[in-house]
Image (cartoon, helix red, strand yellow):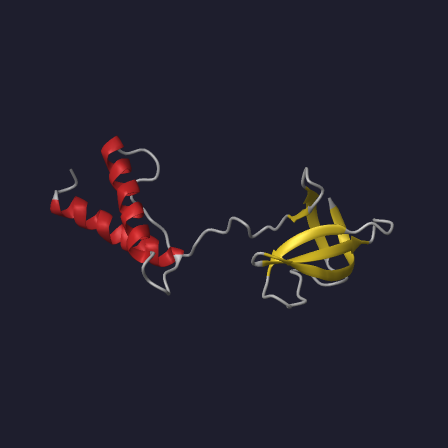
Length: 133
């Protein structure tokens, strides 16, 4: 569905998310409930009044924003044989990503880019030491 935000009212908090009742230009008095990550007491909703929004209605009746940037590709990349290549290389690639994820989980400032860079370093080390085996 698509609509222009007509009004936004924060009606509470649920866990780490704010609860918002949003009315769109094509609705007639009914408000759709959206949950969005925000600080408790923060009145911000990801979209302002007058903004054109794509959304869907979940089976429970709550709204879900449809954003184009939900699946943005991280700036870092990992070229450890994502397509083709031997089964062994794919297994090593997965193992490097897992090991990097676990290692970076202990760091406060780790990002997906850091995880991928460390995984690439591990992968390169393994295959350089073994002459690309």
